Length: 269
Length: 274
Image (cartoon, rainbow over all chains, first blue to last red; front, side, top):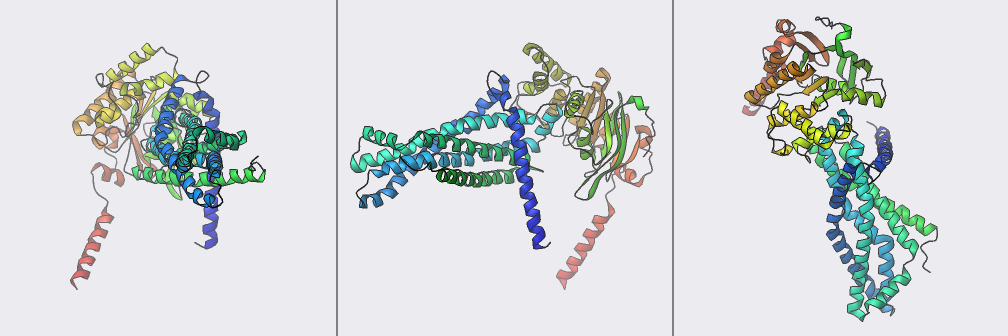
């Protein structure tokens, strides 16, 4: 096979990938209302709640602890430089802005991606291997509505919540550092944080976390559905799900941040 | 291949005409013609890789053939809309090879699932119907167990119970006796015959287990390398002279690989002694 052929084939695979991603996305989006409480089916909502525990609640300790550590690291790393200029209190701005705009959503997304993208693809992959997905189809039930849509809804609800909580953890870590190093009081710290963060930063954070949530659940489901063959294929799919979702999260983060910067929204008042 | 038992066209519940399929250049199904008549048990025999699973996937509408048509109850499922396909599928019950039971639900919930999702029956009615189906397959005391707690035979019975939940006209069983010991397997055969006797449903069984095939079948069809090489009443089928069928029925191995292996071993031994 010539080089050109290889490149062409790889390109076709990439395009097919993108196509499959979009197709699945639309089919899930159409089914999402069925999962909602009140208007949808009660059983779907119940399975969505179970998913919320699996994807969100049980990820809380990990992403919270990660955010706390990262906040402390960020404070420590910046403090030594800022101290030279006698501007140690700027740590507040750095931590507050850094976490709301960037680290909060990113750390949460990465921890959820590691836990749930793999879990989702393993679960769905196993259902494919054991013909459970086929069984649903043959019974005249829609696997998209029954197995995928609740996961999407759960991720879209829990990941932003997790993001808010881990952002708070990170910002709290900044306070811990300043309380120790310059005995800043919590009230002063909170005031400084409140002055730094604008509403659009929070909006940006939430939009990002929604995008990341979509990437995680979407890649996990798609990799699971693509499993062909035996149980070892499930293992490959979990690896692929984590690798792809992590990469796509970073890529989306870059894109979103670039837009934010180019629109001039990143200047602080 | 002409169907020698000459089913009348009106009798055929499933009618497969000229179905062909190939994966990456390899012909998996080659112009398959097959009728499954109302009320009969048709056993589709074939070795591994003969295309029987692929044919089954096509009959269930999980894959579309490259050529040919599959008509079930008068609807060509290769060309119909998604909703028509759904209506056809509601008249078919399928028990997959490994059961395909949902692990997060108990056996009873598994059997009740099609009723819960597709009917508007009251909860108590659904429970009763699920229980009756479990009694019919002999699992009345296993309703509260979860699929991983079941033995192989129980899992297949549960799968049959779920397949029967919507009172289907056609029951399709994929390898019902694969991986089961002779006693459990014989019990499953009896269950299949019982279902046919008492509900008069049409049953299509895909298998490679000869003994159970000839015990339950009205007619036997055999696939070899994607081609249907024989369809006959089971009494005539055993007398079929096709070399592949003889080989299959007499359990003779393929000649080639053994020769190749012997050759390989002898050359290897020669090489190592010199």
